[in-house]
Each structure stands twice: as structure tokens, then as C-alpha cells.
Amino acid sequence: MRNIGSGGDAPARGVIVGGPLVAMKRFESSLLFFINAFGSALAVWWLMRHQPTMIEISFFVVSGCVTMVGMGVGIHRLFAHRSFECGPVLRMCLGAAGMMGCQGSILKWVANHRRHHMHSDAPGDPHSPQVDGHGKSMPFWRGMAHAHMGWLFDDTMSDFDVYARDLLEDPMVMFFHRTRWFWYCASFFILPGLYGYALGGIEHAIGTILVGGVLKTFLVLNAIASIASIGHTFGSMRFEIPHDRSRNNAVLAWLTFGEGWHNNHHRHPRAAHIGLAWYEVDVNGAIIHALARMGLAWNVVPHLATRKRRQDMQPALSS
Ligand SMILES: [Zn+2]
Ligand SMILES: [Zn+2]
Image (cartoon, rainbow, N blue to C red; front, side, top):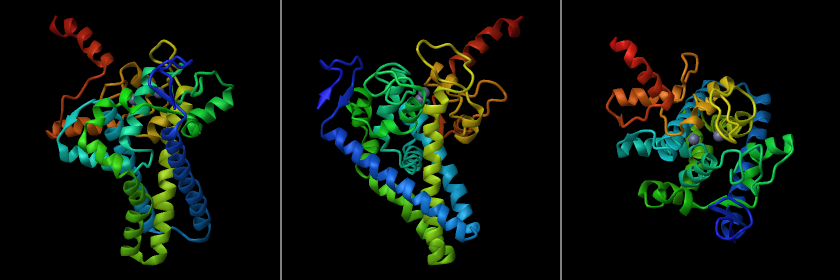
């Protein structure tokens, strides 16, 4: 095992190369990818032979929305960026909903994501279309494949001690980390299986597992992975940020409940609401504001651009 930050030849700090932790990362990524890809292929095969009923469709839609909110509001804006604060029950619910995304534990996701912000599109970024895990530039299509999912299987990983030290001392986050495979199994199999069986019997249990469990998880994974690949390649740039290729992409934003306003987000990662124009619909940001209005969230961090706009308007308002 070699830590790039401690005497290695690559420039990024807190990147572990090789060793047992990386082997474990590759094993878990491979197993999750196999379940996602093989299960989704089975789901397509099943859909060609069975007309999906409201049982499969309702679980697909509701659990897809819950997972997307758990990933965006929970793991991304609450755990990774501390965009707002909330009580332990809501924090637990958002963490559990995010774990249903089956994209690694909260600890692992946050460490990778904070490293992404620290080194955006420069050596050290875990999933940039521009540079690989060792900081070498890549041709276009290889870069897109690496940023989308290829990075999950490379020989590098984020050092939790460097990028998520606070979370190593967080009992709730460590609980989710130790029990991560339970949550993956609940998302893929247990919850859709119980729902389908209770409402329609064994055939609907199988259909709901395939369509509402695995296929849904794979689609959510691809939507969020697209922010790293497409969201750093196609779209508009409101803010010029040094060596950062993040874009605002409306299609991605609709698919991910607002996370696709990615250039806005890179300009001020701690902001709770990242849709800055009226047409930049940010469902996750609206949920955080609704929670704040209900007294369930507080210390909500406003976007720098919004703050500046308010300051600029002050003289006009007071004159
Ligand atoms: Zn990014
Ligand atoms: Zn972020």
C-alpha cells in the first residue's frame, strides 16, 4: 500500500494506491456492479414477458424518489457538505434513504466526494473525465468511461483519515458503514420483495425485486454517475472556476432532483440550494427549505451568489 500524499510520485494528498483496502474496494464495487447489471438485464427480460402492474410501478417510483432525495439531501448536502443541520431522527432517516442508493457507505461516498471537490478535474480527482486515478490525462471516451464508473474499479481510493476524519468519529455514520451490506440487501431484495409479496404474492415479489429494487438502483446510480461524466463535460458554465470543468446541465438536474446544477454547486459546495435562476429547479434544495420552515432543519447555508445578490440589492431597497 502506498499513500500518494506521503512520498509518492503523484501530487495528490490522501490517495491510497494498492494494498488490501483497495482490493476490498474493488471487490465491493465489482459485486455491487454485478448485482446492478445482471439484475437489471433480468429485469428487462422480465418486463418483456410480464406487464408491470401498479405494484411494481408504485415501488419503482416511490423508492426511486426516496433514494434520490436520500442521496442528494442526505449523503451529498447534509453529510458531505454540512449545508444544513437537523435532529438525529431526520439525520438517520436521510442516511438510511441515501444508503438505499447502494453507492458505498456514507463514509466512503463522502471521502470520495470531498476529494473530488478538493481536486476538481486535476490530479487527485477520483472521477474526472480529464485525469485518471494517477493524475494522467485521458482521451475523450476513456475519460468519460473512467468518470462514469471506471474509477470504481481502479487501483486507488480516498484516505478516510484525510477526507472524512470527522465522520470516523460519528457513531451514526460508522453504524451505516459497518452495516452497509444490510442496507444494500434491503434496497435490492428485502423491501421490494416484502412489498411485492404482501400485495400480490410470489410473482410480484420477483417482479418488484427486479424492477423496483435492482433496475431502479441501477438507474439512480447511472443518473448520479452522469454528474461526474456528463456534468463535467456538457452544459453551461455560469462560473469560471480554475481547472474546474463542472457544468450546469438541465437534463441531469431534472433527473437528479437538482444535483445537475453542478457548476453552481462547484462555485459554492456548501450551499443548500443550488438552483440560482427561476428556471433552475432544485427539488432537493426546496426540500431543505421546506424542512427549515417546519423547524426540522436549521443553519441552512445560502449560496454565495444569492448572498451577493441580496447585498447588491440592499442600497436599491433602502433608497
Ligand atoms: Zn463535480
Ligand atoms: Zn458536492
